[in-house]
Image (spheres, rainbow, N blue to C red):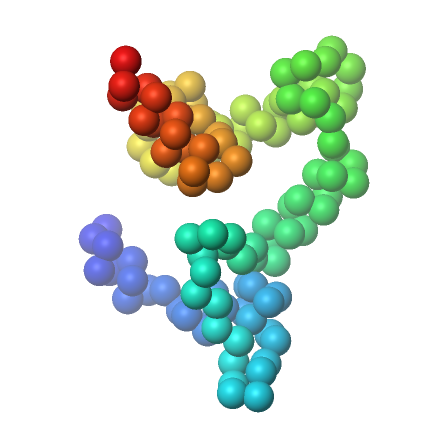
Length: 114
């Protein structure tokens, strides 16, 4: 499917409704957020998944042999596999999660430097 076809199928109002912050209204009208380069807003589904994970599955990834650590590691590896599939990567090992864009760019620069 072409990117144009994808854009034509996107429903902006429905997508906006997934982000709780956009329910906020100002004196000038609907809330608008233009600082996504620094801090992206999270959709409701992500907030709910984070709340569930922190409340019921929080444990160190790849650092323990007990149940919570195993659950956290399994969730982390499943997310890497899903992202790899979405991106069309050759394997989940090609996906690296970092804290943010600056860390990613520094990691990439250091890798390319060698």
